[in-house]
Image 1 (cartoon, rainbow, N blue to C red):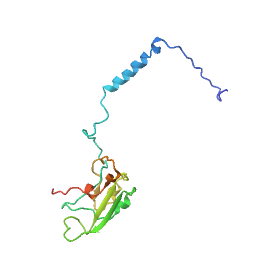
Image 2: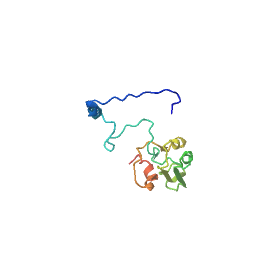
Image 3: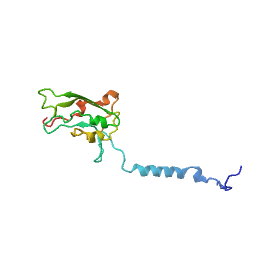
Image 4: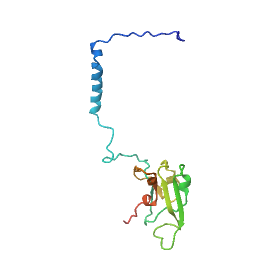
Amino acid sequence: MESLSNKRKVLEVKPLNLMERAYLPAIVSGLATTMKHFFRKPVTISYPEEKREFSENFRGMHSLKRDEEGRERCTACGLCALSCPAEAITMTAAERQKGEEHLYREEKYAAVYEINMLRCIFCGLCEEACPKEAIYLDGDIVPADYLRKDFIYGKDKLVEAPLNQ
């Protein structure tokens, strides 16, 4: 069968000489490549011992902030949950009781605040939507775990420690 372009390429097969039949040049070339990479600086890091430098706009784990007096800033308005495209944030609002003025800023607070880290896409929209500047993505890398339930972070893992501790 003829080709459509009527162009043919004639391949010339030369017999291998003694060095090529012994594959010595190929072996030497492979060893040279190996030795070249052997003396280079490694590009990987030993993670638990060494920490990687992150850029300024790195979005890490979420944290719920406190004000200057140590009270929680979140007022359970729900704007962060509404702005989350992955629907990873759920919250339940409650009324502040008498005597809890030192714990919560306003009359309403988030009794339950949970973020499902398996659903979160770290887009930062919750951070931008919060009118009280209560949530930030300024933490470390989300640690690995084995169980799905351990990736649902409640207020116990999200609220930062008070300043006076």
